[in-house]
Length: 241
Image: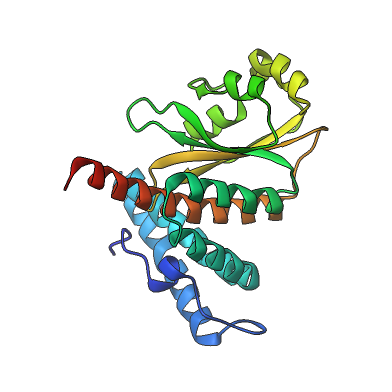
């Protein structure tokens, strides 16, 4: 099975009725999830770890649509608005507004990953002063939450930066900026490549419920796809192709 080309519901979002998800789409999603899980097991057995992870990622999208149909509908609508946004900076800014609402936060940022070095650079932010922006102008370590999330390509939560050993190099700026907790979620494109990271910050020790984190992750996947596509278009335009 070609797991690089997921079904229509992965590209545009499933059709939902007023009460949730339609029966036909539900059956299609359940079948697709099962096929993708089977493909992942077979790919892993053949030593194709990247393909297995990609299939598992698509399967997780199908499962999210099954578990959270009304939320999924809202996320797909938000992603559709991003696709109509012309510039990467504006896409990042709009996405950050949505994530701040989902994450119950009033401060956060979006960083893009340099395709060569992997270093993270802030492209959109809300609520921070120049000292914070200067300190995190370029992140290429795995002590910060965003750096760890980028290296692992996985969500990361630091519930209290004071007690987290790895965050020690950044505690002074955290105190000056007034945050004690942070969550970071990778933004990945359709192929699973890291595009950037979105982070939200909290004034007290804090961790979001698992359901909220799952919703943020699903939206971040959609944002990563939009950003990835926009960056590719920009690169082609810059090359004059």
